[in-house]
Image 1 (cartoon, rainbow, N blue to C red):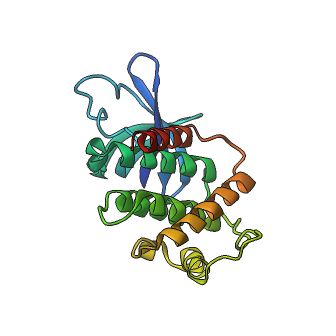
Image 2: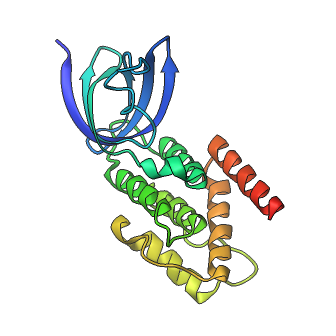
Length: 224
């Protein structure tokens, strides 16, 4: 008899398998990152059709087989539907999901990472926050939660005091309090430099979603 477990989490990735199935990657509160198969999820009328897409957050009932989990039921509490009408925000969001897939592991304590991705996606949908600021906060905090934060990267030009204060706040504040401030253009520029330096140093993978995001921003700036 298959073991049944119930987990709370978010779907980071979904890909087609066979004619009607999906393979999903779920970041869970209880068991870290898990891969599972959703049988028949791509059939019209399937109860798993809408609930096995990226960004879906909720409770998942999984069955553990010999080599893989399968999704039995999904009770979604947040689909992050706002991304359907916000293409730029969705591009940022897909990048965040890819970063989470890179950092997290199976059977690890990823509760804080799950909080981070949830709160960061909510921040992207907040009209009062710049997407770029949300991105830099997310990247720096993800690095810190992964235990790799080395302090401000060295450079010839001194950082603004307000940048150093902001960096300290990001690294040391609870996830729930990350997205409650704005910064000046100068601080935003320095945070961009810091986040880029960290990514080049600690991330040894080319993020496809980041390439799409950068190309999109380039086209927007070109047209503007």
